[in-house]
Length: 532
Image (tube, rainbow, N blue to C red; front, side, top):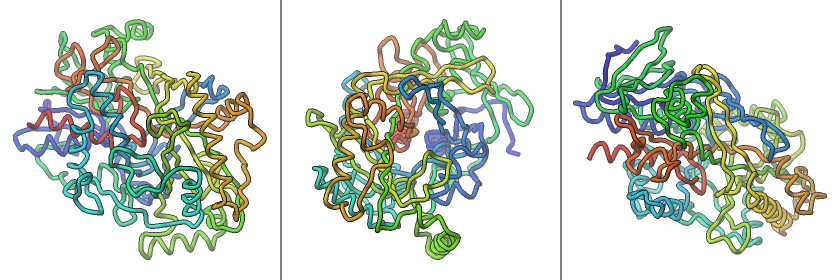
């Protein structure tokens, strides 16, 4: 058991991507003491490290908090599983490992809204600093950082032909999604190292765990923040059956994510007055935006039966096939066990009026009804497509003052009419790709949602039927200057001292792609502010 002090310079709450990076950067100064707190456990589950193991980590209470959304009106009243990592590395330990920055315009919009220092020109050096790119240093990539980025170790004939089909549908073939404009089709680059998942714990914690000024605790659940007047002075946590108060000489930094950070603020009396009073939480600092502005990428999972080509469905359906996959992975860390959840990606415009790509495809040589269930018995591929810039907004709210009770998560998917229109256009574009001559030899047949659904009302219903989260919640402690903003451009909570938030919750608007690496960039930004 690590020796626990009564106070530290910095207390970091949450050992996900942001928390791991900040612990690394802040503890680099031997004169600074850092306490990193993780409510979950160690990242020592075998399936965390084998890339295809995400199938066994999502929905597993050992590795996933197993949150559920409230019933969603826009999804026919369905409640969705809402995976969040429950181990060191946070969601980087169970996610799709896709390295994606988004678009330059995402960050330029943040800056244009008054968040000085967050434009693309400002954040690109931060991405480069933490990156260890397989191709070495270049204008857009770095190789001196900790965040390993590699090409995938497996190609599928079916996906190669889907890439050709996308080109026939007007989506150009590109090599790199991370130069500021990600429109096009390519294989995703992934956070792996020689066929093994490269999570934030391996990247940023493992090399520095012996630093005497860094203490890392797992199973340490922060109950509330401690406040004196308008200053956060430390945390109250439960650890090994004891309730402890730990003081922060400088600052408490919340890195608990878009679900955890607003929930902790609310339990501590920081948030919307009406919500806090309804649960008997004394209002210490009224801040209406805490928990609001929830944004997420809703994916529409279109499934196509195929013939005459290999997919994972057949390969994994027999003992011999499974044995071959295991042998190949043991031999050289390749084959299907080295697969990221999605190998091929595409970014496209849902209609010509879009100023940049507003759709993202994750294309997989497999199909299943939903994560956690078996693969289909028939050969098939899945073309998942999401609206990159949804207009719908949801919220995260505590359900009580009890830290053990999960918060209420209400994404409000498809509640904005523009999101319904984009969903319909996305289905139509997917069908055009599937009908391209490059895929004709495989005789693709639409299994979900069903080719008979063609009218605007049909397509809206189809989106409600097949829509599911792609696990990119952001925005619930939004950065800005307006009445609903939670943090300023230096990530300080408005109206309070001694506390900052540095995770995906601070995004005023969601980035155009996967959100793990942008979250690391946010932490790198704060590190640059705290360690000039």
